[in-house]
Length: 397
Ligand code: FES
Ligand SMILES: [Fe+2]
Image 1 (cartoon, rainbow, N blue to C red):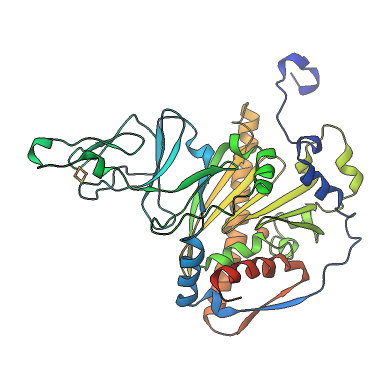
Image 2: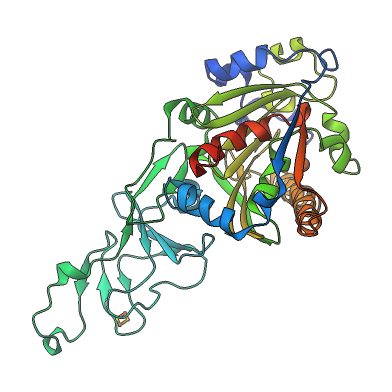
């Protein structure tokens, strides 16, 4: 039976975002997008030291003033949505254990037993559990991190179990992402988690999203070089000429700052303002939102999924990236599954073989010291905007 002849009652409505389902601020941004090709690009030339991408000292400053000081995203809440589950995380070079207790509260622990430090949970798959038992000598913890039993406690003299609870990092679930402060010796700073960005993430249904796919990458590039292509549109019709470039062209972007986070709103190639007024139309077919979540995540909308990337610096020339493909719901039919699988492959190809590759070849070139500065033009204007914020925190502004 083809779609036209299927009785309406048997077709579950496909969930999607329409203009009306967005929030006021998103709609306002969409209304500002000019017709395609009618606005010249902003004109500017900004220079930024090449050493900021290659020097150890700069990397350490960024680590100490940003990544170990501010809350950073760990993963989407959707990756660990069920009560009584746990998952490990290593992207930041720290062994973390995320646990959602029976009541639904999510905690981020260091994945280390308080007896002699053994990793409590291994592997990267989501686990269902009611307690956490150390594989070494079977000390057992509750899902809230409290030590419940010490095997053969009679052999220990005067130990107080309350002194051996798991080490926990300050964390928060916000906008559908789990955020944590990685340094327990520093006053936790969640100040970047402002309501303006939360409103956007909520209207895009990130808190209730389904994680369709996840892939981890280890890139030989400074984290800022990995971030850059996701902040500018200049490269899109060029670097992506053989893949998705023609869908976008040189678009005009409406740029908004939501607290420290950037939102870029753009129409696709040949965009005309009246296109967004077709009632009930999937808004992501016409408009792309690209968010830079400060300091190190990117969220980009596509017609049938949302890409979330978390960039985790390892050294001045190495970055771990977690890519998540988020959908409104799990595929409801074989056809939907097929489309999602194809989209996953395509986006990994575009990001992995094109954007990530661009970051790696830039790193290689910069290492040669051929240039003292990077140069950014008007179509890359959000990059210097971001570096101004970063440099202010690093103290090098
Ligand atoms: S190291 Fe965990 S019980 Fe000994
Ligand atoms: Fe790109």
